[in-house]
Image 1 (tube, one colour):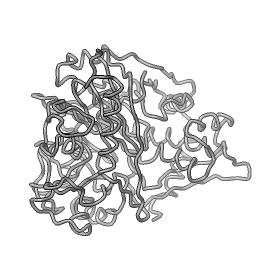
Image 2 (tube, one colour):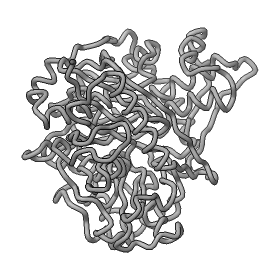
Image 3 (cartoon, one colour):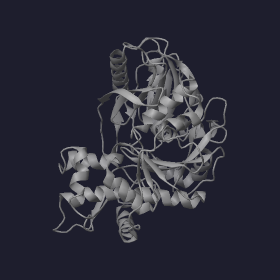
Length: 487
């Protein structure tokens, strides 16, 4: 029987269970989507119980298919999304509030005026409704939840660990904790000052454990044997950084998913805060100091493709985008700023809104498709330029993964615009691979980061073929300024 580690990937629109063997090769998976709720403009919610059911079902199906249980589970998850539940019953007390949700925008404007430096220096983040703290504050003030000893809260990883261990473990790890706007990334613990600021009692928060280490074992979940270790957890973007083997300072990756997330490993010292970028914990292996990263979070990448498909009907499926865009040489002067839920790095403007400029009678479906790809490229260049300037490091290559990274047109345009090689992973689903690696390291299935690096092939390399199109990049910035502060 083939030994394997199972990665449970709880994304924003669906969940998957993936089996990874000792050679680091994913060889079986199951996937299921779950419901998205939009109760008001700018609000995004999930049913946490539905996420648990989906994880349980895909995991049970995978184990049944393979005929044996995994050696361990690794978990990776959408970050910042927050769940509150009753410790006594295990029932959610409200729908999960998703990272994309903007209901805390007004509160964050107050925080920018009154507490910006406190939040920036303590957490490495900026006041923005993207992060968990204002979502929790809303649950406790407007959502009808009283934060007493019967309540437990956590990000999606914490919720899944609770469910998979039958309520025995209430825990998270630093890569997720550092996205809540409640965690001190220097002391590596919950900040009493920030908990007080947001009205979050410490006792409702989970214990923070190492990213790679045993959290607990499965218990009482239908279709999943008891006693399987849960041994590695990381937020999706940090898991992708680990899965791309970016183990040395200066190595960087971009994941083109629902949004795009550029992370650069900056080593074991907390870096100075940089305008436009976030500082986050990348991971902490058991018994070791934390590794930090700088991050540029781009809110809309795959969601812009979904909008072309579902909102406008310009494409029938996401994989039609590249073919349609390739039918024109360029976007014909059209610029699309996909600020559907505001702009992330380096602008951090929750009041920005989606904007299209440069339309003419010659604009058609192909030009709009090309403009969506251009937006992915230009947003990434914005973030990379800020990273290079702030870290004083020369980027030698950008490792890429995620669903949109399958497009050669995107990868080549990105290499041209950065004047830097782009390397696409052999398996673009490196988020799940990173979670599997973390769990396997904790259980001795793999022998350290060096052993993991040796397992990974390079994938496809895209060398710059033309000089960066600075004129188009300047046009992009003009369009961004028109999109900002609209709401």
